[in-house]
Image (cartoon, rainbow over all chains, first blue to last red; front, top):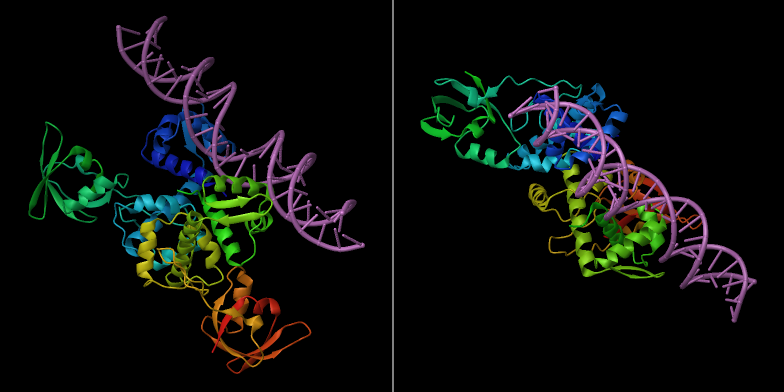
Length: 217
Length: 217
DNA sequence: TTATTAATTTAGGCTAACCTAAATTTCTGA
DNA sequence: TCAGAAATTTAGGTTAGCCTAAATTAATAA
């Protein structure tokens, strides 16, 4: 049984790997908010236990064993977020932090019960896919709103949950999962956007638009 | 904020104190399943933080601060048991173990949400009182079934939750909270009892009878 | 190409909880 | 009452994760 710490390392490595870049000691240290030297230690340990491969000075890559462990935790995390949202009525800006702790102590039995109670959901409240028990993850085919061409009509599929303030902001302008909007204008100067939601036109910063993922519609 | 370990010590000290006997190093070590020497270490630390008073070689006593911390944890534990039972339909023999982990990471906000969802329950699924937020605990006036005189009619108010097998056994003979029964006969030889539940007569061991708490009716 | 900078690893330490073995104190029963 | 047994504490050690500072390797820009 991996320790809570090991689980956190694996989860963050998986996330970084998903973003496409190489997973380096410092990117991991950044995610976990600890010193790089500590990461090096742990990475050696995890490599010894075959959770990942480590080329010194180059980076890290999950093995199949590591990937499976990471997905188990991510599944529990997202199911628990869903539960907090649906059953205990927590806001979508609160659930990520709460779930950080629970994912590690949720028994497999509780995972199943919650899955049942929720009706076997496929995505969490931010639109992130919930990995299946067999390790499959649905690929969400969405691109960042910041890449949408002028005039495009799109639908919100996912919002990055890493930043509670972003989530609050997104709610406050009337956006949520599956809402439609269109890109009125792309401002060259600062790369911000003017979007139209319903009848309202709203200016949105690049940074926000980079964290809202949409599909054309 | 007390650590998970500190919380566990305080909780078990509270339980032992409640049983009436002096709380000794070895009784605590027994509860926590660790060596006595380790308990001595921690007790010194907790005494330094004014959670308890320690007379070397004599025992330990919670301070008001320690009592309050213990009750906070016990409240979370019992609310969580209730939630597992009512919402996730876990059996009463499973919930204690599950709750052991959650009590330590449940935020105050989640505690309140769960309290609400459950309708502000006063007792947990084993009949143990749920301490109020202000630190009050309702005293359950029940005596062990093993003390009930022959011919007495009683009602089950509480069952000791420390032993899952006992709980399974109690269910299997048709007993649960608030069920009525009467003591048909007390067997002198081994101090076991014959009780009548509905129309069934059943022999029950002393050890079981000592862990079922009832009131006369 | 090479010198500087940036990233990574190594070395040496710390802390919280645990352990065993040895020393000390308290309890108990003849 | 006092000697042996039982309980407790002290002493010294372990492990997992973290840290800082120093040494090493890789990347980059003149």
